[in-house]
Length: 442
Image (cartoon, rainbow, N blue to C red):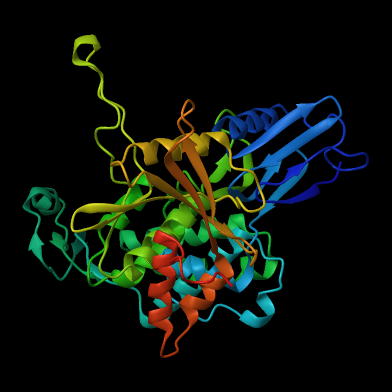
């Protein structure tokens, strides 16, 4: 049986219609794929249901590609091409390097991971062109012409053998550092992940150019952590490349493997919620002038165990919205980033209940919480859900659903005009506080 490709978009549901690759007993002969399907469903990355008539796929905020038995499943983000790459660069502070012919690439069918790999290849090529970072590495070797200091612990053995070389400990400057080894490992990982033969060839050549200068090592979490913590002012140029490798490695965008089987699933899934939160965090932090934006600060005092009825001394549950906007130490807005187009799709009740608690946890008179969600629809407008007293019918709190048009945000970030900064500040205020009463939304 040949491999078949199934494409769907974020939050899309695909049913096993007659004649589709999802119809029939797709996973019956693939126990490893069945375990992977169960794991992905349990983790909430994508819901995979085995029905009598075939497989049903229910995508969420995760995008990317993975293998499932004889299927290659690709989940694409709604925004793609150049706008997505520009927003990714901004959110994760990546450099704007010349990756490709962006006019043509905007309409291509490149997968999400290929966008990241294109950027990683460009970052690596730029580092190679300017010269890889060198550092002093402790080296023990036998030298006929001694350098550094003599290692007397091994001297007696050399003397007994009448050797002409001496054991020395010296510190030559070398490119064979942890940073360059991790960068090489990231390129090797990218080579295995992409299905684009041209991109794969380019990345493979870059990885080979590293192999000639360093000792290749398997990329793992401990080595990556060591490289990340070694960053300083001399090696800050490596930060974007390490950020990209982390996006390919970490639990939100990791290469998928069935942990109960040695069979690897080709591809990964990346949580766009994390990207959207990082994007809003930077944009609001830079453009809400006169305000302080705090990420994931705990709202204290909403829940508390009764001291007289807490026999196991549990800590009180806490609420942690994505952003608090403060002015003079007073909370002016509670914001939560949700990567789900609530203009096109319904508001899930778990989101409703979560935001209701955020709103009710504030002082009387300011009991409102806002969901900021992405959209591409110019018609999208703010919507408000009132939390009412069930007996009196009076409003107790407000839950605001506020759209941010990603294409509009991309244009604002790329604008270099004289009024660009003013427009970004105004847009940030509208995101945090809504439209002023006297301003038209048209």
